[in-house]
Length: 166
Image 1 (tube, helix red, strand yellow):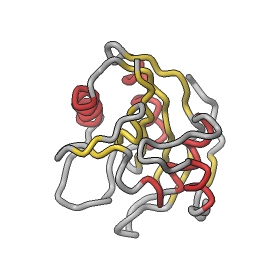
Image 2: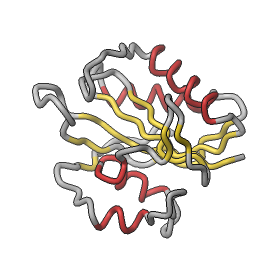
Image 3: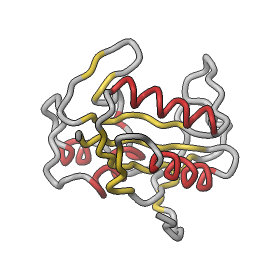
Image 4: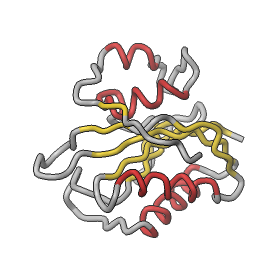
């Protein structure tokens, strides 16, 4: 089993419910077990400003799936929840599931880059990750999570009050 961290985000079609549904779908993945889930956070959208705020979280998953198998499974969950892939980057979406870290692997494939290529500059990824990751987490590329947090203030990030169903 390898520990994988997955970022979740939604800003359409009742975002908190989208994340709750994604958590249930992650629990059904074969050869995988969800071991931790961060709080949900509200954040301003990247890209076009004329879209709703996002709801984000991070999940720790132990899995035996290969990286591209997991990516395919995550994209199937996105599609099942109404995700429409468009050419526009950072536009509104029902669900976005990103593999942030995959064990101690560095992955550079056309479909998958791990560590996630821009996580170092995204407070809506780093702060939820810090809730559930080991205090001294070192990314496969050598960076420490604490150093990334220190360089990425939580501007515009809001921890959301909610009853955690799982």
